[in-house]
Length: 214
Ligand SMILES: [Zn+2]
Image 1 (cartoon, rainbow, N blue to C red):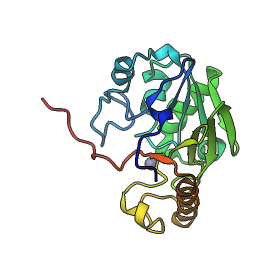
Image 2 (image 1 turned 90 degrees about the vertical axis):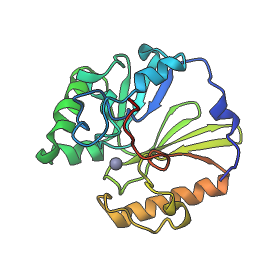
Image 3 (image 1 turned 45 degrees about the vertical axis):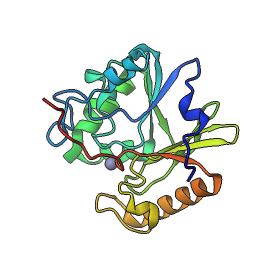
Image 4 (image 1 turned 135 degrees about the vertical axis):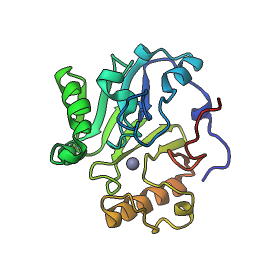
């Protein structure tokens, strides 16, 4: 992987903002029973000069509740954003009433508001922003390539969840829905990223969740 942060990560271009994943959400979010809510995504964006209405799209890598919190319409300040997910994840949650929140609080209200964009595979979302299916962690897990000239960045969602999977992409994760499919997706994506000298943007390899200082 590239050792330096590429130019595309350091320069914000004018124009609409696309978020990849939407964090754990506010107090009372679907992740509240295990994650340290409230999250601070809206505050972090404000510190970067981004207003909620600047966000034109949110790509959900998958529908686990630590990735979708601020995209849930009842909790979301991003009222102008279309929300992009794979149909395979929608189907999985429509069929699983054990996790009915994902469908009833996220998918259906977004559909009713005309803000749901369900994909079936790869899609170029904007110049230099491409969504690709990387199934296995969930049936509709997807990742995002951000490309500019020779620079590229892969936003991985939960394609990998521990640094040791960078050394050995074959190592499974107990939370993967289909470990064998996840292994294939992880191996292929990491091999492509390595071949391109891409930078990885990951969800869970940094500091684990920690309670805010009081
Ligand atoms: Zn996950």
